[in-house]
Image (cartoon, rainbow, N blue to C red; front, side):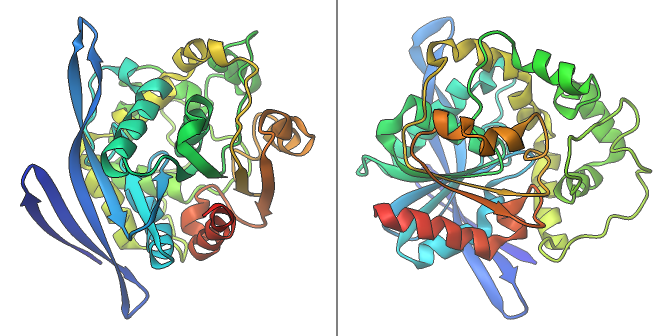
Length: 357
């Protein structure tokens, strides 16, 4: 069970969230709701827009920025927040734009890699302006955004630990969606996410709670397909047993937040795949030049799709990430690695970043 206590300090809303850990222990987090300046209004570039950002924080010291993926929230990092804070770091874990209690711009084109990295730079300027560089940890879409953060602003990153998603160098000959369709066809989940409103309508029929359970318990070591009108490929009323690392309270936290806004904000990240490809043209062939540790489970769908395994192990990954110091393959572990192996991932993170403290 989790409990909530909230108050306002000036224009800053604070929540205290307690999450059960075992029978007798609780993890306590402070969640802030802050406004950041995020850029110019398109028709009047001198007028700044503001984004209300939900950020979980714990601890004091050097900042560890934790960036979540889809369909997750800051809550995905609950184990790591607790751990790094206990070791003298300041954990900072936002809900990204479109997720949870952070604002969700209506325009799908407002979810490019430049928008999201811009949010994170503005967040760091707001909460950690006294620190030139911070540690960064990403998972899933958060890992992809972390790669872009390091590519665009290596001056702000001390070291990176990325989970699940490897760095994808830009292929100037072929757009992202074209490559995915060629490999897996129209039923591949990223392709199914492209038409505005279509997959949202299917998810609404299935039900938010069911969709969250389907995603978080997915363990097939290969690509995910969502055939039109067939959901996740099995009866929507068939039981889904939760693994030991995922409680009903955890599921309910995700469901409660998604039901407020829907899935559209998170899905809009996928809808910008080709737009990101266009925006990244200046970085064709560029390397990510920060110290990196990469961790993935051998049952992860990402590791087992689109040639990722060969790319990671044949030297190409190291070619584009020259300061890649460690690659860790965790046996028997699937995609949501920071939750499935919370303690182990926390230790992996600390073992790496402590070298640069």
